[in-house]
Length: 200
Ligand code: ADP
Image (cartoon, rainbow, N blue to C red; front, side, top):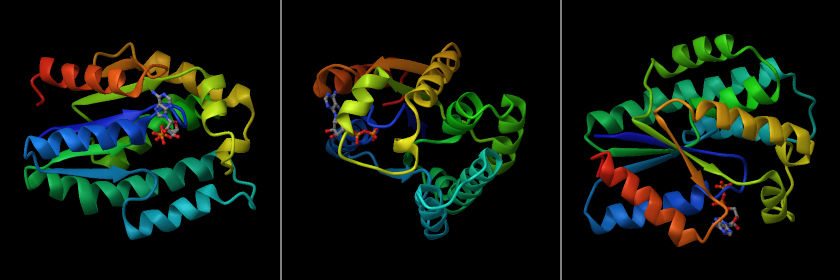
């Protein structure tokens, strides 16, 4: 069964679109699993707490390795068994988030990110990755009332992440979706692309 992932800056609409896609899959009686990064396993949820804690200063390398650790656990504990069970797996963020955030955003070399990502993921790569793209300003407006470590980062950092996603989108595995539109329009685009690519 397919393995697909959703990427994009915060508040781009990943969870909203994943929820709509799940409704669609339920109607079609397709068995699926949704996993969330960081987290999705009990070890990963603990790693998530460390990552989102605003108290500690964290170096980019530490941050990346924590994300990779949670990803390693998620792949082995959840993703691979579900794929073996013929489930449709949907990841809310996966390895590409580290390329965009720790690579393009924080400046860690992309080669290093790729090699540690490959080690963490056992080289599994999504069949298709939707990058939901919105301007940084829209992201900041949508999440105006929420606060965590990433959300306190400067606007330039989020700009770099967004540009990183634009660079990634040149590869045919990625589909860049304009997320600054009506929620249902975005959803229909996603479903149509999955149909075109014979994934559903
Ligand atoms: P993410 O999972 O990417 O962080 P969410 O799906 O949680 O994003 O969406 C963040 C906020 O933006 C939510 O309040 C959601 O209702 C809203 N939102 C999502 N998609 C759209 C859209 N296309 N237009 C307007 N608001 C949206």
